[in-house]
Image 1 (cartoon, rainbow, N blue to C red):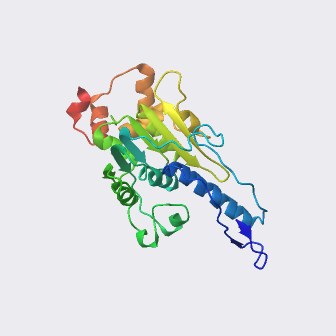
Image 2: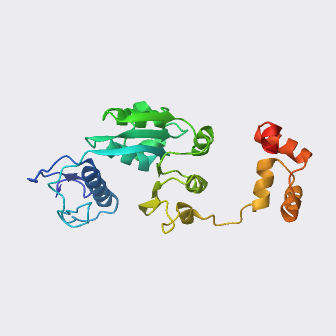
Image 3: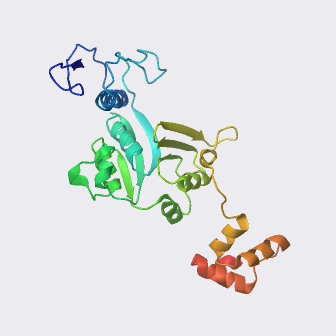
Length: 274
């Protein structure tokens, strides 16, 4: 990138230079694009100077490891994408360009694309505003022949409709901390967590085993929440004092308790009796 001294200090022209080409790699291309955009923003808004050329491998963060390796074909099985915002948009953009990738992606998000989303969503354009996010993701993945299932609901509704989740892998990048804790409670074999903040971004992997970190541990509430008896009272539609009494005395539900709980849960009383 070369500064044009005849223009404003924040304007630049590009000078091409010979680069060594390698096998197609959308993950490397996405990383390079992100680094280029960050430098562009620093030059425009912070009036920073030229920055040195950077070469980094996504495999081990050296300068050239894997530069001549082709991406292998992969079968990823069934994967749930929960929250199709900016982070998931970037992931799906890259996955859709990974030739030879096979699997079934469950796309779970209840929201539509809005105008403010466009400044950080890779998959949408002005013409896509008010389009559901699951439709945008499905359209991108369809181009690579990947199988998709669109679910225009929140994670909790998706899990409830299936009686839990028996799919092995969940990729989650939602705004609500509670949804991330709920995802961990579903006990997937692998949870891939992506997030962004005002001054940071990150990803974490959580494998279901005794010695692996729990996703919910990263998102502990910072204030007082309802107690276990208060939560039970809310779910069962019973007064808190009644639930506390049952809890303390280790009593079973009385007939009137079962009727109230059945009404709150929307199920038949007989199901609660057994």
